[in-house]
Image (cartoon, rainbow, N blue to C red):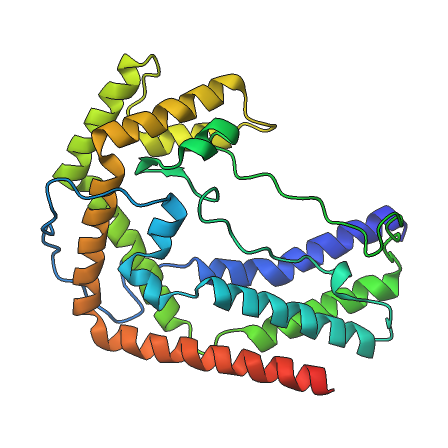
Length: 305
């Protein structure tokens, strides 16, 4: 097998290992609700007439009530560190002593100001609008371990490819949550709360005001989420048109009060869900706590070994 074929095999097999885990992480309970929970008909929550807008979209999403029942940034970083450490240890045992964390993708902590500025709530962050538009912030290139030293060519041997796939599969099994039902419940509740917020009359009214503002400014569009998705689908750096649209979006979001209304309403619906599913959600919090302790033990034992 030539080098190109080995690269394709590695990429394909890694996807075969990782995609099922990603799919379960995003799964939601379907019509049958296998998580066994039920939801009462939601009641439009009471909110103030002019709720304040959050500082950023990402910070607002992370501050939602259901976020307390999901892995936080520290949990994600711990899982990434555990995955890297365990794969490095596995590769060393497989005979690849020079394999290091530099050979494995590294996750960087999210910037709450620029990571998710736009969505159904409009656009939050004038600085992000002026510099990145609707695109995610630019990532810094990975530096060589020693400044001025060219990167080492990756090992593309058959033995290396096989060891990488085997190690990734072993580590994925080690890090797999013991109980997935709580995650499925939280994902379903999150999806339902977003749907309820989108259909709430106060959100639709604020969205109409936002749309009228955009149209008056020369950017006719009916839905802020559709607008954001449109520009995210365009490759390359943001154009002058995209930046101008984003700045107008941020201005109309502030004028309409859309973001404040959207997140206040969404918060209200999620609080109702938590009350209705308190027992299951409390149990899920314990599962998350146990998972953190399990990852810490895996890191400790790997370092000791």
